[in-house]
Length: 250
Ligand code: G
Ligand code: G
Ligand code: MN
Ligand code: NA
Image 1 (cartoon, rainbow, N blue to C red):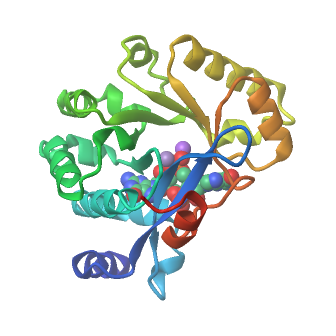
Image 2 (image 1 turned 60 degrees about the vertical axis):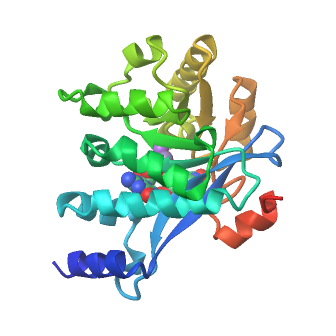
């Protein structure tokens, strides 16, 4: 399709694709703990396509490994220019299935000079449950090298409690579908509370994503959540905007 060839062109020319950075805040709503890189496509026609849609196209058309490598390099280059304690990058299951992934990450870290401790990789639960050992072995190797592994959209999938038990994960991100229902829906509040308690008990960090209202923030903080991400605190920002918020590397 047309979108596919335009995406391929952008990827090969390195034009039109860019990253936005959404900060993650401490409970005071001011201290920036880190940020998540989110891909944006500035194409004049297809630019309005949501990231989830063109990521899916890239996955279907065999472009995601190349696109993912571009994202990682761009994000790590940005991170070294900032004082951000960490930067999180979303990783497709298909990237983790690629045998060269851990080496790709290592060489990007070496090339940019970013300390592995400052890189977080956001994965989804389904990756942990695949039949192949490749993704799990990749995650173990990356973790061994100091990179943090984050379970994104937690609560929506198979809830890989076994992985939490085995301490194979450094952080959970509570999916925004639960956060959104927090004010009104008693069941959602109970689930969010249980997920936060689980993270605290297992000494895993926990971020709430999609925080849009003061009421949600207040509840989450009362429940013990120490990391907040969402439109209430900040939308995804242009690199220059985040630099002016968090300060350039000294
Ligand atoms: O930023 P936005 O809400 O449009 O993102 C939609 C989805 O796309 C989210 O699930 C997010 O994790 C995913 N996404 C955003 N940027 C990237 C990226 O660089 N790589 C991958 N694999 N997914 C991304
Ligand atoms: O799946 P993942 O958690 O990576 O998705 C991140 C996406 O969530 C980003 O693309 C971002 O645009 C979006 N997002 C960030 N904050 C909020 C929010 O407060 N509300 C909603 N609805 N989406 C958000
Ligand atoms: Mn994410
Ligand atoms: Na998410």
